[in-house]
Length: 66
Image 1 (cartoon, rainbow, N blue to C red):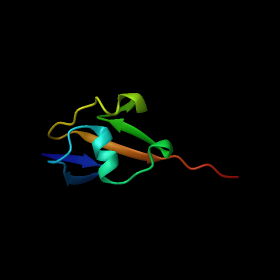
Image 2: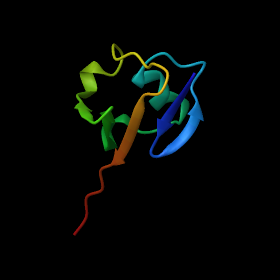
Image 3: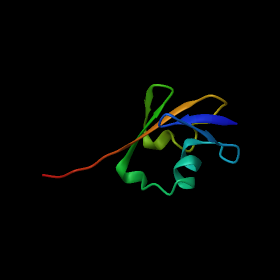
Image 4: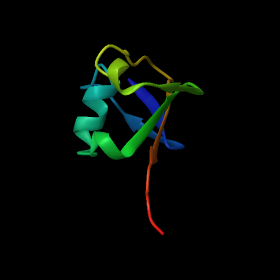
């Protein structure tokens, strides 16, 4: 299965959910936002949100500073 991740085509054969995709890329869940096919996904939905062929995922890093 291929998906678009931040504009790049990636092989997501071994992941089934957004939570698994985040784990695969070793991203810190507390500092990212996720968009799935143009819609924001709340963190509590990540384990239940299934991925499908052609999905578009955007990971947005939250950075605080002054």
